[in-house]
Structures are given as C-alpha cells and as structure tokens.
Amino acid sequence: MEPTLLDMKVALDTVWVLMTAFLVFFMNAGFALVESGFSRAKNCVNILAKNYVVFAVSSIAFWMIGFGLMFGNGTSLFGQTGFFPSLINGSSSFSALDWTIVPMAAKFFFQLVFAGTAATIVSGAVAERIKFPAFILFSVIMTAFLYPIAGHWIWGGGFLSTLGFHDFAGSTVVHSIGGWAALTGALILGPRIGRFSALGKSNPIRGHNMTSATLGGLILWLGWFGFNPGSTMAADGRAIAHIALTGLVAITAGCDAVSMWGALAIGAISGVLVVLASFAFERLRVDDPVGALPVHLVNGVWGTLAYGLFATSAGSLSTVDGLLYGGGFGLLKTQVLGVAAVGGFVLVASALAWGLIRMTVGMRVSATEELAGLDAGEHGMTAYEFEETSIFMTGSSEKHLGSIPMKKIVHEPMMARG
Image 1 (cartoon, rainbow, N blue to C red):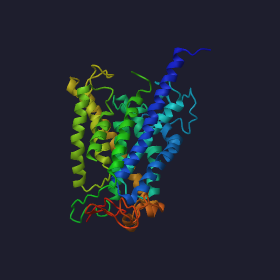
Image 2: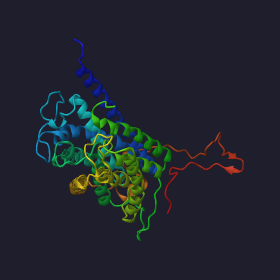
Image 3: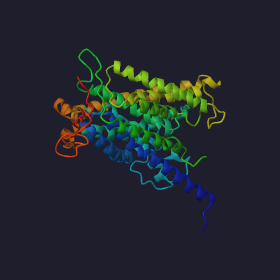
Image 4: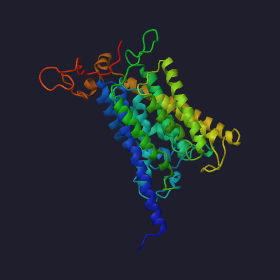
C-alpha cells in the first residue's frame, strides 16, 4: 500500500518536530557550559551534575503528572486527564494538542524538552550555594506542578488562551516561569559568602572559564533554531553572551507575528534591558551568578509585552495588529494580564515550594562547605586535577620564557579577591 499525501505530511512533520526537539535538548549542554564557566572551578562538578540530572528527574515528573496537568482536558486552570500517559495515537485526553497531526510521543517529547529547559534556568541563579538534593527536589515540583499549571493557562486551552494571550514559543511559559522560580530561590537562599559586604558593597565573584561560557552561549544560540521554529509542529517553509541570549529570549513570544524591523527593535531594547536589570539586581543585593534573571525573567517579560506592541498582520502569521501598528491597546492589555497572572502564581507557588524544602531537607550548604566548594562537599571530587607544576614545563625544573617565569597553575585561576 503506497503512502498517501497525508502519510507523507505526518512523516515530514514528525521528523521536523523531533529534529527541533533534539536541538532544544542539546541546549542542556549549553546551559551546563554557561553556568559552569560563569562559576568558580571548585563548584564545577556540582553544576554539571545539576544540569545532567535535572532532565532525568524532569522527564519522570512531567510524564507522570505534568503533561496531564498542562495539556489534559479539564478546567480553565489545569488539566484533569492524561496522567501517566501511554502516548499512543488517538488518545482523547489531550484535545489541546489535536491541532497537530504528529504522533503523540513526538508531541510529548517536544513539550518535555521545554519543561526541562524551564527547570534548568533555575539552576544558574542558585548556583554555588544550594544543596544538590534541594535543587533536584524543586525541579521535580516545578516540572510536575508549577510549570504545567501555568503552562496550561496559555498552551493547554486555559483561561489566558481564551482571552487571546499570545506566547508562540515560550517567553512566558518557559523563560519567565523559570525566571520567577529562580528569583524566589535566589532571594530565599541569599547571596554567596563574600558577594556583598556588610555595607552592601558589591564584590564581584568571577567565573573560572570564559571559553566554556562562550561555547555554551553559542550552543544555546544553536538550540534556539529548534526552540522557536519547532513550535509550529510542522515543516513550514558574559555581556556578549548575555546580550545574544537576551535577544533570543525576547523574540520567542512573538517570533511568528513581528516584522524584521520589529524583531530588530525588540532585540535592541532587550540588550539595553539586560544591562539595566543586571545593575538593578546588584543594587538590590540579589546574587545571580550566571545572570539568569536579567536574561530569562526580565526579557521573558519584555518579549511577551513586545508582542502587544509590535505584532503585525502584514507579512506574518498574525491576524491582529499591536499598538504600534494601529491595533490599539487590546493586545497589550491581554499580555500584561498574562504576565501578571503567571508571575503572581509562580512567585507564590515557588516560594511555598522553596520554603517547604528549606524546612525539610534544607536549602543551603554550610558556610564551611560553600567556602571549600560544593564539588568536594556534595560530590567528593573535583572537575580539574591540577599539578603543582608550571605551564610548558619540560623537565623537573621550572623553565623560563625569556626573562619571564611561567606562573604555576593554581586550583582557582579566576577566584575573586577580597
């Protein structure tokens, strides 16, 4: 029996969805490199372990509970069907996903990598001081409950979607939700030891590997080629790193609905916002080692609001116009309502979750362990094995390059001073 045109379309669309999902999954490597590069060497193993394990536990939590809460049939607030899904085609439990014809397993995997990304965002803001079990437990709570419930409001047929709220690929659903949860975690944990003086003076703590951070940023950039286009579900035709990622976050909500000039304006404004937000969080003594809050939270919010300003029905998939294209304030008001609803819910719910974790397993490592590094205290190993030798040493004695002696390798090559 020869395949029909519909069969071929299903096959092509499935390949498209899976390819883009693989790109989004590969963003985990980017997050791991960025976070470890912007952190100190003594915490590198801990950061890599968090980024590795978070997707594993998120997969189980999202399959068991989260997918049903987010896309199952139910109320305007959360889904009530589809828990522990078999992921077979023809299921009547996920009417919110009926608009795409790809197999249910492909739909699940694509949504899973988004959920994992939201959980990974939290890791950077709480880096270098959170207990490993506490972070893993929060990741389970987030991907099983927080992310799916708020996501249901927008992508699962909930009340915000019926009001016309627009978030094409996740400025709010992924980045803002991750950002709000990261903010509460950073506030409850408090800053790292030595990050701020008793008088509030900022003491920057430098990362240990800009090469790693830069490569991670480029991997994340590559991943966004799956993050945004994959949301069609069909084959339709440090400062530098932060600013690049910021533009990618900001355009995610309205990438299907803005012109090239609109995209340029959104990206340019996001570059300014990430700098201003970084200064603002520092003035407020919010310790965010990798800049997750300015990048994902602030510009996730900005990208969501920007749709209400820059959406245009001319030359895009949008059927409505934003404020700057003569569409009035209607779209913008809906976007503001959505940002406020999601932000309020995630702030309160994540604060309760963090508080519960702090009262049970505890959130923060001891001061001794923090100063020594989480690699030794939490994992019993180090990321790098340094020898007390000089660079370019060829024998048992230290060599010199001209009159300049080679510096010895130290365990903390970029430790903050003071």
